[in-house]
Amino acid sequence: MCYVKCARYIGYSLVWAAVFCIVANALLYFPNGETKYATEDHLSRFVWYFAGIVGGGLLMLLPAFVFIGMDEEDCCGCCGYENYGKRCSMLSSVLAALIGIVGSAYCVIVASLGLAEGPKCSDANGVWNYTFASTEGQYLLNSSMWSKCYEPKHIVEWHVTLFSILLAFAAVEFILCLIQVINGMLGGLCGYCCSRQQQYNC
Image (cartoon, rainbow, N blue to C red; front, side):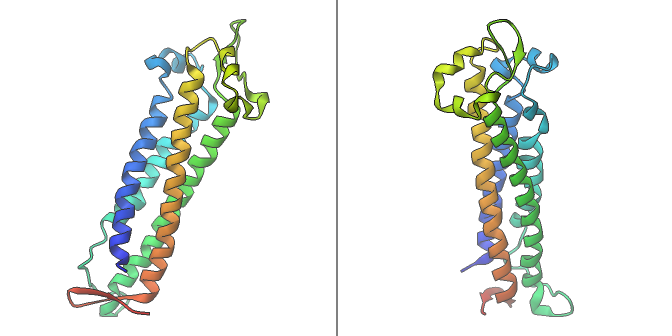
């Protein structure tokens, strides 16, 4: 099994997942494409935690580029041993993967809390509050309750869809980084690089 190729595939996958997280988080600031709700502080408080932009986005690009930048033909020495270059590279990727795990876990937690609490919206009396906060997430299973939110229009659909996207992609990122931790440990402890052909033996 080629540990470096696996790491690079994981890196490319993380880049796409990070982009989706950033875009989803950014869209949460503009319900119905309008900016007034952000300027008037009528957005869910969890939108301002930047979970998708920072946790599942920018912070995820660091391990992604580390994995992508791993060169299959790089047999440089490490710690005074010529054949240990690849092992050091793989083991260092584990540290990057741990950073990714922290970022994705943060995004998963915030997205889950955002879904459970629901959006901030205006009710029939024109009062802005978290209409579904007391339902403990049950509103997600009962769409007939969504009509309690009068403004912004379709805010529940907007909120649920985008936070679900954040949750899904952050979960994928978490799994990929966890796989890379295992992949990096196996590649670092069991693999070595010889000449121009990569080989791994335990």
